[in-house]
Length: 88
Image (cartoon, rainbow, N blue to C red):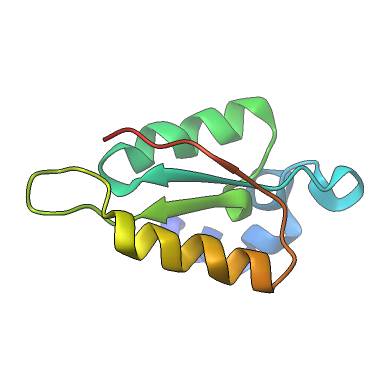
């Protein structure tokens, strides 16, 4: 219940957006199977969940390179800053 409520107001909190309203640090791209770990890390570092992008994985739990490429190209088109972290 509380997680559903948090999703509704996360854009209003530092936990959701981080300190990026003034700093514009970019996005962090991580494999989906480690996503909960990175959500916690983004919270502790004050970088915000909104700056975290989950990358799809294949049947061998490796980052799906083709889908990741599509995500990165979309970010470039949106002129978003990003940092890429891949764990294959």
